[in-house]
Image (cartoon, rainbow, N blue to C red):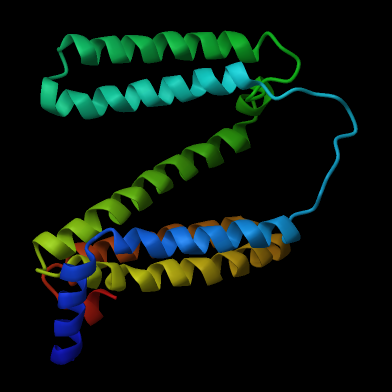
Length: 212
């Protein structure tokens, strides 16, 4: 194990952290090629245009808001650029609401937001994604800074989670079709909670195989 870790450490030092992104990029290319064959070639029965302006306004809302939060950490949340970013996000959000209520085929149909079940699931999905992304970003930093791993070792440590997600996602979809989404969603959220507790307690300072 010590010999293998030594080779991994030297490899990480030689190849660098960019190697961790080359593998997902290669897999993405394969997925795109396979998707061309797997996805059905559907045809629209009625003519409708894609709401480019609505999508642009929504992107501006999100982008300016996130830029303001990020820039505020260095420039201060009372700086002109941050306040201007938040103001721009508010204006873009207002225009987006006007846009989706003014055209027949908007980027996000307003009827969706009047569906209470959809809104609840959207809220749960948003907070779940925030939790997941925070772990995806913070766990490698913890492994490198606190556990003393190399970038390559940190990448290997989080690989089992990605593999498990790839297989479990397909199984969860089939289970949801049979019994509904209530139990699979609660099971997934509970698993994420247990994993988060484990990462902040047992995995903190632990070795590669314990974290993996």
